[in-house]
Amino acid sequence: MKITDVKAYNLRYPLLEPFANSRGWTKTRTASVVEISTDTGITGWGEGISTPSASAIQTYLLGQSPFETERISEAMRGNMGALSGVDIALWDIIGKALEMPIYQLLGGAFRSKIPAYASGLFKKDKPDITQALMDEAKGYVDAGFPAVKMKIGFGATYDVKNVAAVRRAIGDGTLLAVDANCGYDVGTAIDVGQKILDNDIFWYEEPITTDDVGGYREIRHALKVRIAGGEMLQGRWAFRDLLQQRGLDIVQPDVSIAGGFTECRKITAMASANYVRVLPHMWGSSIRLAATLHWQATLPDAPDALHPIPSLLEFDMTENRLRTALAQEPINAVDGSVDVPQAPGLGIDIDRDVLEQYA
Image 1 (cartoon, rainbow, N blue to C red):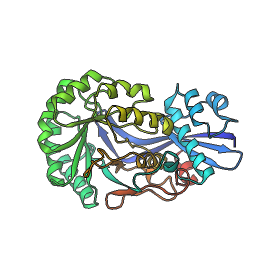
Image 2: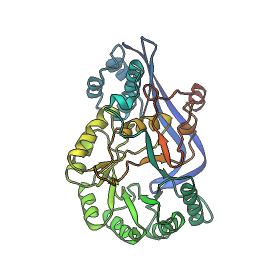
Image 3: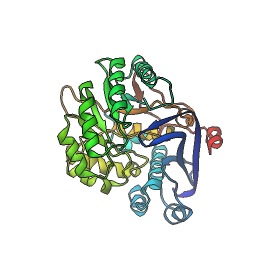
Image 4: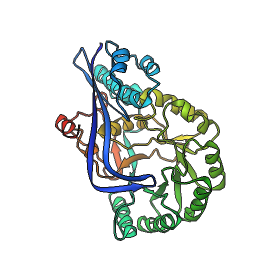
Protein backbone atom coordinates (compact mmCIF):
# COMPACT_ATOMS: atom_id res chain seq x y z
CA MET A 1 0.00 0.00 0.00
CA LYS A 2 1.32 3.44 -0.98
CA ILE A 3 0.18 7.02 -0.39
CA THR A 4 -1.02 8.54 -3.66
CA ASP A 5 -2.51 11.89 -2.63
CA VAL A 6 -2.69 14.31 0.28
CA LYS A 7 -5.29 17.06 0.51
CA ALA A 8 -5.45 19.82 3.11
CA TYR A 9 -8.55 21.69 4.25
CA ASN A 10 -8.53 24.76 6.47
CA LEU A 11 -12.02 24.91 7.94
CA ARG A 12 -13.62 27.96 9.48
CA TYR A 13 -16.96 28.11 11.27
CA PRO A 14 -18.27 31.56 12.36
CA LEU A 15 -19.85 31.54 15.82
CA LEU A 16 -23.34 32.87 16.37
CA GLU A 17 -22.35 33.96 19.89
CA PRO A 18 -18.69 34.83 20.63
CA PHE A 19 -17.14 33.81 23.94
CA ALA A 20 -13.90 34.56 25.77
CA ASN A 21 -11.21 32.93 27.81
CA SER A 22 -8.48 34.87 29.59
CA ARG A 23 -6.53 35.27 26.32
CA GLY A 24 -9.26 36.93 24.27
CA TRP A 25 -12.54 36.56 22.43
CA THR A 26 -13.31 33.68 20.07
CA LYS A 27 -15.52 34.53 17.11
CA THR A 28 -14.77 31.57 14.83
CA ARG A 29 -13.87 27.91 15.26
CA THR A 30 -11.23 26.50 12.96
CA ALA A 31 -9.75 23.11 12.07
CA SER A 32 -6.81 22.05 9.91
CA VAL A 33 -7.85 18.76 8.30
CA VAL A 34 -5.80 16.41 6.17
CA GLU A 35 -7.09 13.67 3.85
CA ILE A 36 -4.60 10.99 2.77
CA SER A 37 -5.48 8.64 -0.11
CA THR A 38 -3.81 5.34 -1.01
CA ASP A 39 -3.52 3.11 -4.07
CA THR A 40 -5.93 0.62 -2.48
CA GLY A 41 -8.76 3.15 -2.30
CA ILE A 42 -8.52 3.52 1.47
CA THR A 43 -8.62 7.12 2.73
CA GLY A 44 -7.54 8.40 6.13
CA TRP A 45 -8.54 11.60 7.93
CA GLY A 46 -6.58 13.61 10.46
CA GLU A 47 -6.63 16.95 12.23
CA GLY A 48 -3.69 19.11 13.28
CA ILE A 49 -3.24 22.79 14.01
CA SER A 50 -1.65 23.35 10.61
CA THR A 51 -1.48 21.44 7.33
CA PRO A 52 1.62 19.98 5.66
CA SER A 53 3.34 22.06 3.01
CA ALA A 54 3.53 20.96 -0.61
CA SER A 55 7.22 20.26 -0.09
CA ALA A 56 6.57 18.07 2.96
CA ILE A 57 3.89 16.14 1.09
CA GLN A 58 6.21 15.52 -1.84
CA THR A 59 9.25 14.66 0.30
CA TYR A 60 7.80 12.65 3.18
CA LEU A 61 4.41 11.27 2.14
CA LEU A 62 3.75 10.59 -1.54
CA GLY A 63 4.78 7.07 -2.49
CA GLN A 64 5.37 6.04 1.13
CA SER A 65 3.71 3.25 3.06
CA PRO A 66 1.13 4.54 5.56
CA PHE A 67 2.23 1.77 7.93
CA GLU A 68 5.60 3.46 8.52
CA THR A 69 4.28 5.86 11.15
CA GLU A 70 7.46 5.94 13.23
CA ARG A 71 9.71 6.80 10.28
CA ILE A 72 7.33 9.45 8.93
CA SER A 73 6.90 10.93 12.41
CA GLU A 74 10.65 11.26 12.84
CA ALA A 75 11.07 12.81 9.39
CA MET A 76 8.32 15.42 9.99
CA ARG A 77 9.01 16.22 13.63
CA GLY A 78 10.10 19.75 12.71
CA ASN A 79 6.41 20.66 12.25
CA MET A 80 4.42 18.90 14.95
CA GLY A 81 1.28 20.90 14.16
CA ALA A 82 1.10 19.42 10.66
CA LEU A 83 2.52 16.05 11.68
CA SER A 84 -0.32 15.58 14.18
CA GLY A 85 -2.95 15.54 11.45
CA VAL A 86 -0.84 13.39 9.15
CA ASP A 87 -0.15 10.83 11.87
CA ILE A 88 -3.83 10.55 12.84
CA ALA A 89 -4.73 10.02 9.17
CA LEU A 90 -2.07 7.29 8.82
CA TRP A 91 -3.44 5.40 11.81
CA ASP A 92 -6.95 5.80 10.36
CA ILE A 93 -5.71 4.15 7.15
CA ILE A 94 -3.99 1.34 9.04
CA GLY A 95 -7.10 0.61 11.07
CA LYS A 96 -9.27 0.50 7.97
CA ALA A 97 -6.76 -1.72 6.15
CA LEU A 98 -6.64 -4.19 9.07
CA GLU A 99 -10.35 -3.77 9.84
CA MET A 100 -9.57 -2.77 13.42
CA PRO A 101 -10.41 0.34 15.46
CA ILE A 102 -7.37 2.42 16.35
CA TYR A 103 -7.63 1.70 20.07
CA GLN A 104 -6.88 -1.97 19.31
CA LEU A 105 -3.81 -0.97 17.32
CA LEU A 106 -2.65 1.09 20.31
CA GLY A 107 -2.80 -1.93 22.60
CA GLY A 108 -6.44 -2.28 23.59
CA ALA A 109 -9.09 -0.37 25.49
CA PHE A 110 -9.60 -0.22 29.25
CA ARG A 111 -13.15 0.99 28.62
CA SER A 112 -15.68 1.21 25.79
CA LYS A 113 -17.48 4.19 27.33
CA ILE A 114 -15.62 7.18 28.81
CA PRO A 115 -17.05 9.44 31.52
CA ALA A 116 -16.87 13.05 30.37
CA TYR A 117 -16.63 16.48 31.87
CA ALA A 118 -18.59 19.30 30.28
CA SER A 119 -16.04 21.83 29.05
CA GLY A 120 -17.64 25.26 28.70
CA LEU A 121 -18.64 28.10 31.03
CA PHE A 122 -16.76 30.76 29.08
CA LYS A 123 -17.17 34.47 29.59
CA LYS A 124 -19.91 35.88 27.33
CA ASP A 125 -21.43 39.28 26.66
CA LYS A 126 -24.37 38.81 29.02
CA PRO A 127 -26.08 41.42 31.23
CA ASP A 128 -25.86 38.95 34.16
CA ILE A 129 -22.91 36.66 33.45
CA THR A 130 -23.10 35.06 36.90
CA GLN A 131 -26.67 33.89 36.40
CA ALA A 132 -25.84 32.76 32.86
CA LEU A 133 -22.94 30.65 34.17
CA MET A 134 -25.12 29.14 36.87
CA ASP A 135 -27.85 28.23 34.38
CA GLU A 136 -25.31 26.71 32.00
CA ALA A 137 -23.62 24.70 34.75
CA LYS A 138 -26.94 23.42 36.09
CA GLY A 139 -27.81 22.27 32.57
CA TYR A 140 -24.67 20.13 32.46
CA VAL A 141 -25.55 18.48 35.75
CA ASP A 142 -29.08 17.81 34.52
CA ALA A 143 -27.57 16.21 31.39
CA GLY A 144 -25.73 13.71 33.58
CA PHE A 145 -22.17 15.02 33.44
CA PRO A 146 -20.19 13.98 36.53
CA ALA A 147 -17.84 16.98 36.20
CA VAL A 148 -17.66 20.44 34.65
CA LYS A 149 -14.85 22.86 33.79
CA MET A 150 -15.17 26.63 33.77
CA LYS A 151 -12.97 29.44 32.53
CA ILE A 152 -11.25 31.80 34.94
CA GLY A 153 -8.32 34.18 34.59
CA PHE A 154 -10.39 37.36 34.39
CA GLY A 155 -9.19 38.84 37.68
CA ALA A 156 -9.81 37.90 41.29
CA THR A 157 -13.18 39.66 41.55
CA TYR A 158 -14.69 37.81 38.57
CA ASP A 159 -13.08 34.49 39.40
CA VAL A 160 -13.96 34.33 43.08
CA LYS A 161 -17.58 35.41 42.58
CA ASN A 162 -18.30 33.14 39.64
CA VAL A 163 -16.49 30.03 40.82
CA ALA A 164 -18.54 30.18 44.01
CA ALA A 165 -21.73 30.69 41.98
CA VAL A 166 -21.03 27.72 39.73
CA ARG A 167 -20.29 25.54 42.75
CA ARG A 168 -23.65 26.50 44.24
CA ALA A 169 -25.37 25.68 40.95
CA ILE A 170 -23.86 22.21 40.55
CA GLY A 171 -23.99 21.18 44.21
CA ASP A 172 -21.46 19.13 46.11
CA GLY A 173 -21.70 15.93 44.07
CA THR A 174 -20.22 17.22 40.79
CA LEU A 175 -16.49 17.67 40.20
CA LEU A 176 -15.42 21.24 39.35
CA ALA A 177 -12.25 22.13 37.46
CA VAL A 178 -11.10 25.65 36.55
CA ASP A 179 -8.96 26.76 33.61
CA ALA A 180 -7.09 30.10 33.50
CA ASN A 181 -5.62 29.55 30.00
CA CYS A 182 -2.21 30.86 31.12
CA GLY A 183 -3.79 34.17 32.09
CA TYR A 184 -1.85 34.88 35.30
CA ASP A 185 1.64 35.39 36.65
CA VAL A 186 2.81 33.19 39.51
CA GLY A 187 1.83 35.54 42.34
CA THR A 188 -1.64 36.23 40.98
CA ALA A 189 -2.20 32.55 40.22
CA ILE A 190 -1.45 31.66 43.83
CA ASP A 191 -3.55 34.52 45.20
CA VAL A 192 -6.60 33.61 43.10
CA GLY A 193 -6.06 29.93 43.80
CA GLN A 194 -6.10 30.48 47.54
CA LYS A 195 -9.35 32.44 47.26
CA ILE A 196 -11.25 29.84 45.22
CA LEU A 197 -10.05 26.61 46.80
CA ASP A 198 -12.82 26.48 49.38
CA ASN A 199 -15.13 25.62 46.46
CA ASP A 200 -13.64 22.10 46.29
CA ILE A 201 -11.69 22.51 43.05
CA PHE A 202 -10.71 19.22 41.41
CA TRP A 203 -7.92 20.74 39.33
CA TYR A 204 -6.51 24.18 38.51
CA GLU A 205 -5.55 24.27 34.83
CA GLU A 206 -2.83 26.35 33.20
CA PRO A 207 -2.65 29.19 35.73
CA ILE A 208 0.51 30.50 34.01
CA THR A 209 2.39 30.10 30.73
CA THR A 210 3.35 26.46 30.22
CA ASP A 211 7.08 27.02 29.65
CA ASP A 212 7.59 28.36 33.21
CA VAL A 213 8.49 25.06 34.89
CA GLY A 214 9.77 26.77 38.02
CA GLY A 215 6.56 28.78 38.28
CA TYR A 216 4.47 25.64 38.05
CA ARG A 217 6.49 24.00 40.81
CA GLU A 218 6.02 27.09 42.99
CA ILE A 219 2.26 27.11 42.43
CA ARG A 220 1.97 23.38 42.99
CA HIS A 221 3.78 23.64 46.31
CA ALA A 222 1.78 26.69 47.42
CA LEU A 223 -1.72 25.35 46.73
CA LYS A 224 -3.47 22.23 47.95
CA VAL A 225 -5.02 21.38 44.58
CA ARG A 226 -4.06 19.34 41.53
CA ILE A 227 -2.29 21.44 38.90
CA ALA A 228 -2.94 20.60 35.24
CA GLY A 229 -1.67 21.82 31.87
CA GLY A 230 0.25 21.19 28.68
CA GLU A 231 -2.43 21.38 25.99
CA MET A 232 -0.39 23.49 23.56
CA LEU A 233 2.93 21.68 23.93
CA GLN A 234 4.32 20.00 20.81
CA GLY A 235 6.49 16.90 20.87
CA ARG A 236 7.79 14.89 23.83
CA TRP A 237 10.74 17.21 24.37
CA ALA A 238 8.40 20.09 25.25
CA PHE A 239 6.86 17.97 28.02
CA ARG A 240 10.12 16.62 29.45
CA ASP A 241 10.99 19.24 32.08
CA LEU A 242 7.42 19.71 33.31
CA LEU A 243 7.12 15.96 33.83
CA GLN A 244 10.56 15.20 35.18
CA GLN A 245 10.49 18.15 37.58
CA ARG A 246 6.91 17.36 38.64
CA GLY A 247 5.49 20.74 37.73
CA LEU A 248 2.10 19.13 37.09
CA ASP A 249 -0.18 16.61 38.73
CA ILE A 250 -2.15 16.15 35.49
CA VAL A 251 -0.66 16.54 32.02
CA GLN A 252 -3.04 17.31 29.14
CA PRO A 253 -1.49 16.63 25.74
CA ASP A 254 -3.69 17.24 22.70
CA VAL A 255 -3.40 14.51 20.06
CA SER A 256 -3.83 17.12 17.28
CA ILE A 257 -1.12 19.40 18.67
CA ALA A 258 1.46 17.19 20.39
CA GLY A 259 2.23 14.98 17.38
CA GLY A 260 -0.56 12.48 16.79
CA PHE A 261 -0.85 8.98 18.20
CA THR A 262 2.79 8.11 17.55
CA GLU A 263 4.19 10.98 19.61
CA CYS A 264 1.46 10.91 22.26
CA ARG A 265 2.30 7.29 23.09
CA LYS A 266 5.81 8.45 23.99
CA ILE A 267 4.49 11.34 26.05
CA THR A 268 2.21 8.93 27.89
CA ALA A 269 5.14 6.65 28.68
CA MET A 270 7.20 9.60 29.94
CA ALA A 271 4.34 10.76 32.15
CA SER A 272 3.84 7.27 33.56
CA ALA A 273 7.53 6.96 34.37
CA ASN A 274 7.27 10.20 36.36
CA TYR A 275 3.95 9.32 38.08
CA VAL A 276 2.02 12.12 36.36
CA ARG A 277 -1.59 11.50 35.30
CA VAL A 278 -2.54 11.91 31.61
CA LEU A 279 -5.94 13.41 30.80
CA PRO A 280 -5.96 14.48 27.12
CA HIS A 281 -7.07 17.92 26.03
CA MET A 282 -9.77 18.03 23.33
CA TRP A 283 -10.79 21.17 21.45
CA GLY A 284 -11.56 20.57 17.81
CA SER A 285 -13.63 18.88 15.15
CA SER A 286 -15.25 15.44 14.99
CA ILE A 287 -11.92 14.06 13.80
CA ARG A 288 -10.01 15.23 16.87
CA LEU A 289 -12.80 14.04 19.15
CA ALA A 290 -12.74 10.55 17.62
CA ALA A 291 -8.95 10.41 17.83
CA THR A 292 -9.01 11.50 21.48
CA LEU A 293 -11.57 8.81 22.32
CA HIS A 294 -9.40 6.08 20.81
CA TRP A 295 -6.29 7.28 22.63
CA GLN A 296 -8.01 7.90 25.94
CA ALA A 297 -9.65 4.47 25.83
CA THR A 298 -6.13 2.99 26.12
CA LEU A 299 -5.17 5.05 29.21
CA PRO A 300 -5.73 3.25 32.53
CA ASP A 301 -7.57 4.76 35.44
CA ALA A 302 -5.24 5.93 38.19
CA PRO A 303 -4.22 4.72 40.60
CA ASP A 304 -4.74 0.98 40.21
CA ALA A 305 -6.99 0.74 43.25
CA LEU A 306 -10.48 -0.19 44.36
CA HIS A 307 -11.69 3.40 43.87
CA PRO A 308 -9.51 4.94 41.13
CA ILE A 309 -9.81 8.49 39.81
CA PRO A 310 -11.63 8.02 36.49
CA SER A 311 -10.11 8.97 33.14
CA LEU A 312 -12.33 11.95 32.37
CA LEU A 313 -12.84 12.95 28.73
CA GLU A 314 -12.95 16.65 27.86
CA PHE A 315 -16.25 17.12 26.02
CA ASP A 316 -16.44 20.56 24.42
CA MET A 317 -19.94 21.98 24.94
CA THR A 318 -19.50 25.19 22.94
CA GLU A 319 -21.16 25.90 19.62
CA ASN A 320 -19.14 24.29 16.81
CA ARG A 321 -20.58 22.60 13.72
CA LEU A 322 -17.10 21.31 12.88
CA ARG A 323 -17.56 19.04 15.89
CA THR A 324 -21.30 18.38 15.68
CA ALA A 325 -21.80 18.05 11.91
CA LEU A 326 -18.52 17.09 10.21
CA ALA A 327 -18.98 13.39 10.98
CA GLN A 328 -21.98 11.77 9.32
CA GLU A 329 -22.89 10.22 12.68
CA PRO A 330 -22.20 12.82 15.40
CA ILE A 331 -20.35 11.77 18.54
CA ASN A 332 -22.57 12.68 21.47
CA ALA A 333 -22.41 12.50 25.23
CA VAL A 334 -25.24 10.47 26.72
CA ASP A 335 -25.84 10.64 30.47
CA GLY A 336 -22.38 12.12 30.91
CA SER A 337 -20.45 9.45 29.00
CA VAL A 338 -19.23 9.03 25.42
CA ASP A 339 -18.95 5.74 23.55
CA VAL A 340 -15.61 4.87 21.96
CA PRO A 341 -16.08 4.36 18.18
CA GLN A 342 -15.97 0.67 17.25
CA ALA A 343 -15.69 0.79 13.46
CA PRO A 344 -12.27 0.39 11.79
CA GLY A 345 -9.80 3.26 11.98
CA LEU A 346 -11.19 6.37 13.61
CA GLY A 347 -14.65 4.89 13.23
CA ILE A 348 -16.25 7.94 11.61
CA ASP A 349 -17.24 8.95 8.09
CA ILE A 350 -16.79 12.55 6.98
CA ASP A 351 -19.71 14.53 5.57
CA ARG A 352 -18.14 16.07 2.48
CA ASP A 353 -20.93 18.61 2.09
CA VAL A 354 -20.11 20.04 5.53
CA LEU A 355 -16.39 19.85 4.72
CA GLU A 356 -16.87 21.91 1.55
CA GLN A 357 -19.25 24.33 3.27
CA TYR A 358 -16.62 25.44 5.79
CA ALA A 359 -13.44 24.95 3.77
